[in-house]
Image (cartoon, rainbow, N blue to C red; front, top):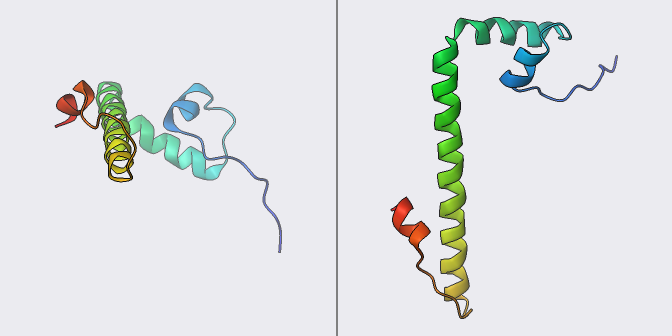
Length: 85
């Protein structure tokens, strides 16, 4: 069994920044990435970032609720919760 060189998975941004140093799979991915219009990539990247922020806010809200249920003396409602709801 031949061991392949370990390479971390590179994001689309990393592939776009360094298109010369790629293995075969990365080249295939790069070709697919290039088929997506740049404007659409920007919109989708922003959407993904917005979703990440929402998830973080929801996780914080969940943690506060669980802390409250576990007897911690905290305020379970905040202005962040209103923005997520």
